[in-house]
Length: 254
Length: 167
Image (cartoon, rainbow over all chains, first blue to last red):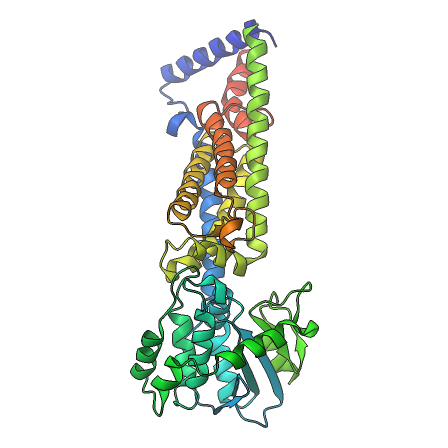
């Protein structure tokens, strides 16, 4: 391919265009910024399909209506034991109120869990850990929030308060909510008893630290030698949250 | 002589196209394989409202894979290079704002992402890398002609037909 044949090609192209024009045919124009029109259409199709796939997956994962909680809750150590004591399946959920994947977990599975709790199919021990204490500024939001979560049980607002803290989860690296803000959130949900004192005094902080250390040191809860949140165990067996049907499958077995 | 340099430019363009295709395919696949992590990565930029984070996190991997496939095949190279450049500029803006605001996040460019310890950020490297990808896109935007592309076939088809009639 020498320069001559290249010029020859261009010349022939021009000649062809002229013949087509003479015959009253408008040749296929190079469209947008010199790109072939067919390829623009192909690009548009592929991009639209990609976006449609993404939106489709998103819609399928976006949870349906929130489910009103209608199950008993009690404190069991630092864990919040939710559901009927005689439910056949026990699920342990390890969370941190500052952990974004936990927010994701609650948004995705919260309604499913609430439904199964309401129906007495499962009981769930919610363990609020404080592994992300250093990711708020000032540090310690995880503990403060976990403590407030424990206070929310005797205050009679746990399901709603737990959901509220994840729905409005503050960003990592930020200040989180102050004790006063947490108190206010609980008051808005109708907290009773010594709610305010329980939250502001950070009453359970020491117990939360101890429980967090204990969970983190438990090999059965570790993934690749590390403890993280959220971690979920069914009847003591840690499960893979990469499987999005873990709860449905567990309920099927139950 | 002129023809020779044109071929060299074609080869450079082809490498740029395939390189950028590889970048999008790898980054998109890694993001698509771990949607929760992608969600966390997008959220960590702290730019979008929570409702939008979900959509963006699900659409972004597929968009990247689409760009990768189109570049690999060489379909609408100039257009896809332009779209790639736009997306890269969005990434660069995202990383820059995180840096300026003093957030400590991983860009999540190739999977991963989210919060890291304040000493572990790598904004400079991440921006340099994105700038490198932007150069690839820029080349193809200016000179989209490459070898082994569907564009080439689409372009040459009407010429070949008229040529056949003539010969």
